[in-house]
Length: 272
Image (cartoon, rainbow, N blue to C red; front, side):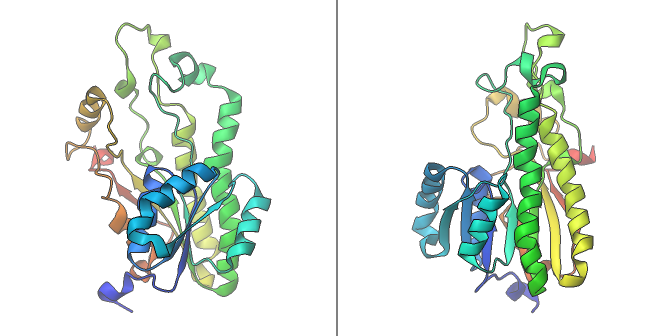
């Protein structure tokens, strides 16, 4: 299979973790668009119902929802038992601590005060969850000698957060909010997991790659957008649908000779 025909998942089943969120829905649309049966998983049933309602008008017969806790291997194995073969796994589940007035306060976002329970909880979702899902679904792919895993990393997997983006006037230096340590650490670790699994299952025709998207505009405050856009050579944040084609490429035979790689799509921010 070559050319445009290789961008097809007709007759294949894809599972997405953390699928009820903004990008999770986009990943689902990307794969349903090219023929996959897409299983949306997330921990909250209400959020899954909302995601299904948003996708159903266009992809209703290709979308299925199942509640699953990526931190609980028994929950993952239960879903695997319900589904049978999964051809594509997208490890998208993560907790992204927002640097906003209703997020962690400045006194808790900073490294010196960041709560250990938040560190453990976020790692359990964003990193351990990807490990557990890869172990369950990826091992089954390896046994069938076919499959693809896509880990959703971030531009903060390849560059450090620029904490100037989050500064607020009038606050002392030790009270300035920052992007917490967890998110870039987890996303960087996902790249290590990607390389490990790619080498581990290379002889079983299970390809494992990652994508590192930059920030997607989602009604952010104008001041933040201006600050961030000034750090991006293309001068803007990403539009919501600009990662669809990359997800399709990495999850289909179109990328059949690509494994262990990280595709950075950040408007050029990481090249500076």
